[in-house]
Image (cartoon, rainbow, N blue to C red; front, top):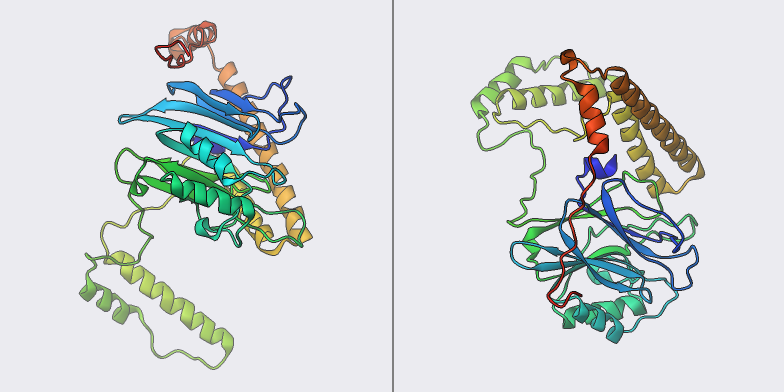
Length: 360
């Protein structure tokens, strides 16, 4: 649901705990993994790319647990990598620098570096973070993050911090936008990077008024609706008067300001409103737990997460049942039964990897 709603083309995941014998994949995506060197269910990184995106398999390092693909753009070949650096594994500046040189010329590396530096928003500077920062500066790289914590430890004595971000080279900063995502329930908050062939336009926050506001009409609406003879003797009367005055100002602004855009909190219109309401409550609960780390808020978050999963599962089952029950072989449904059978028999042809001249 989240990947469809956010229209994710490439997904980077760390700490996958995948082994060689595992079968972990995402429907509609081609999956590549860098497992832990010991082939045990620990650490690991994976990269999942839509099967309609042309790409070639790139660098794979189990020492750093990194996997990358090469994607063609209009201007260059872009190396996109998913990485997981274990917190106890020491990596010096030369190792980071060699990695950045291997991924020439244009690159995006993301996920869990376990390297902290105040330059990209962490609360402190670690040895690994200093080494990564120096290597990035020497290799003309930029660091992109939300500036907000991405790691939320279960131990309430530990402080949340920012350890998930992106290293970028060869892409102008004004073509990149990084946003946080709180839709998934994990100790790491997902981070979304959007790359545009043109300049990324920053969406302006909603405003009551703009340059086209009719201020004379605004003034008249307030004068016509404000009642000055109200009692303000008790706190309740004062609060009621303030609420009423705020409502008058809002309505006057809306009535006299053209081109007001409606802002929708959800892009995915396929799900019913009750599921969207529970998703909204879950997001609020996640934010509250991240702020307080209180056990009762964690319990509420778990309850809403389980409820949301059940509601989505029930909805999908109902949709599938209705779809199957309405399939017919007649003209009244445009021969939907035969079209469904034809679609299941049609072989899936993923885009083949791009091969080099040397057949590498």
